[in-house]
Amino acid sequence: MLMAPISQAFIAAIEAFVAEHQVPLITFQKGQRKDDVMAAHLARFTAPEGVLFVGKAQEKATVFRTEKRRNPRTGQPYPWLVRSTAMVNHYYVYAVDRDFGPFFLKFCSYFPYNAKLCLNGHEYLKRQLTQRGIAYEALDNGLRSCAAPATMQRVADGLSAAKIEALLHKWFGRLPHPFGARDRRAGYRYRCSILQSEFSLTQALDQPVTGRMFFEEVIRENLDLGRPDHVQLIFGRRVSTRTPGRFRTRVMTEGVTPSLHVDYKHSRIKQYHKEGRALRTETTINDPRDFDIRKGLSHLSALRKVGFQANRRLLDVQRISHDCAIGEAAFAGVSRPVTVDGQRAAALRFADPVVQALFSALIGFRLVPDGWRQPDLRAPLAALLGLPPEGVSAGRMTYHLRRLRLHGLIERVPRTHRYQVTANGLRIALFFTRVHARLFRPGLAAVMPGAVRDDSRLRRAFEHLERAMDHYCEEAKLAA
Image (tube, rainbow, N blue to C red):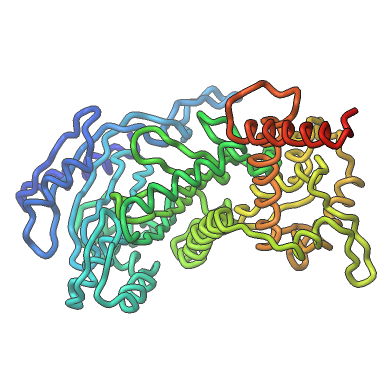
């Protein structure tokens, strides 16, 4: 009852606003796509800016309720606020801004009256290019080409927290919302934080088949690291009570457009072939605290750096995976002992199963943005060796890390006990594991005498060679 007057006044203000401005008030039906309703209204909208419509939907929300409690000493009742959830009405205000393009503001009609602003940086970019008279060709949430790429990049980089805050206050001044002037004077006002952010990189391709071939290669590269029907590359981060979320990489091949998904805590990198014309890599961050960044909008620039670095890091891994070529000197440098500043490290021999397990585990850690610790590598290494985590001692892990570090495959993050996989380390790990898994194992399985007979060219060639050698020995009277 304490908050009912505020809720009722807000709902009345919404109804008065739509009546005064002749804006449709639409009740969303169950299962109805709000984006489709928005697109239909946007197609008919011709003004530079304004409200398209207001939508109403009943959705679950975190709310505070009052419940009756009694004083255990006096027995007198008193109200008490408790956190709960409830199905309450939410109001979506869909609008177009002169500088930002389409966006929506969502208000909860129940205490504490949470609100959400959703905007699209690509729409902002297109609006800014149009105002500057710069020609471009648009994709869905992206640009395929632009007449002034350098200017376009500067405009995109200029989308700041301050501009988003200004947009919010501009429309708060025009739209009804739960906190009236008296509430705002008392300090009750909205403070903007980042609930979800998406950072994308769109790379135009010369022809559609290029993207299809790329993803076929990505899928082929990952099939030997997990099950063919649901590829997963475990990041190997030890999950504790303080580490929420999943750590895995998936290649999804359902439908005609394959996509790559990399999960990291509450965040995700997604990569796919955009409209058959571009390679799209996008990082979605659902909790900035995954990267030790606060949620406030003022930290957008730090979050942007993390998101775009993650996109580039994924591309680096894939490019290296397909171009990994190693010379004799590099191979010898890994497979022989080394001495660095008087410290000697044993060889990382190709056929050693422990070395193969180490390299397989290292591949996943290249995408971990803040480095990893010795215990993080221990669990996946033990699993690859068929051992429980305690089967690899701390002393043995120290030995392995020392070998990897002196061979230049990993490096220590300055002033921490964390490590990072070097670019060289990733190349070597990928090359060793791919050659072992896709050349040596299937090749030897096909030509060994005890192998299941098949009609492969490799098998026939070896049998022809064996017959020729037997015939030569008989002629030379050297047959056993």
